[in-house]
Structure formats: structure tokens, C-alpha cells
Image (cartoon, rainbow, N blue to C red; front, side):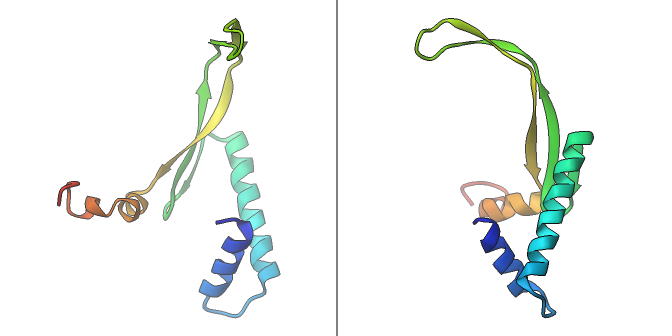
Amino acid sequence: MNFEDLVDRVTQRLAWPTAKTTVREVLRAEFAIIGEALATESEVVLPELGRFKVEHVGSRTGRHPRTGEPIAIPARRRVKFAPTLRVKRRLQPWWRNGSPGS
């Protein structure tokens, strides 16, 4: 699903009539706010979806894929996502029953 697909689905799901341009602006604002929050804070929790958390990855030594020479990989920050239990159950229906074989 891309951004325009999301705009279409949100527009269809809303119980009141609204323009796609309004939905598009709201979603862009929401995503911008999440990005800004992740840049300044360590996590963003969306109760119906999951948790976005900033993780610090230390510097390390890697290898150049062609030459095999060691190269320095600098430290960086990355975003990890942990879905809610509700999302996990939608992805793995067997979780409802408690085991994969059920």
C-alpha cells in the first residue's frame, strides 16, 4: 500500500463526508509529527498500531564486499517498530489459539 492508497482508504472509512485533500494533509501532518518526535525523543507509541523506538547502533568494523578490506562503519541511530498484540494476532491468526499447530 502506498500513500495515495492510504488516503483513499481513510477517506472511505470516515463516517462523515470529507475531501481527499483534507485527509492527505492530516496524514502528512501526522507523519511529520511522528518523524519530528523520533528525532527529538526516544519513542512514539500509537496504541492501536505499535511503538516506534529509536535505537543507537555503535560503530563497528565491516568488510568491503568486493575487496574484503576492513572498513569503519560509523555509529548511527535507527528506528525499530514493535507492533501491538492486536496487530500481531492479525498477522498470525494462530496466536488466538495459543500455538501454531492449533
